[in-house]
Structures are given as structure tokens and as C-alpha cells.
Length: 70
Image (tube, rainbow, N blue to C red; front, top):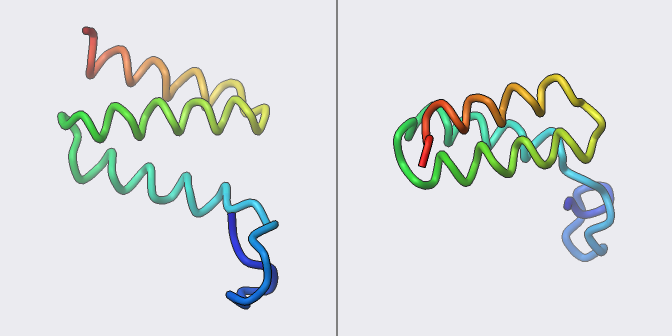
């Protein structure tokens, strides 16, 4: 979540889904075979599922299963 208007004194009410997806993509690209990438792929898939982006969510889960079959 982000602070309202970017002012840190205000509470965090604004969702930061776009920023989270960007960070997940960077982690996945930087550490493709690391456990952190598996967590990032799972979190990315769940976030996309929450946002009703079903095709992209399914792609993230498929990539997770391909890279980490265990």
C-alpha cells in the first residue's frame, strides 16, 4: 500500500498493485532459479488473480510450475 498523495504522515490507503507487479518481475528476472523467484511468481499469480486478470495469473502459475516442479 502507498501513502495518500505520497505524504508519509498520511495513512497507507492506496493500493500499490502496479508497483508490486513491477518488483515481482524484477525479482523473477534477476534470480530466475532462486527460492525468492518462486515466492515472487506465486505472489504475482495471486495478485493477478485478485485483480481478475485470469490469463496473466494462469501464465504466472504455469511458469512457476515449469521452473519449480517440486
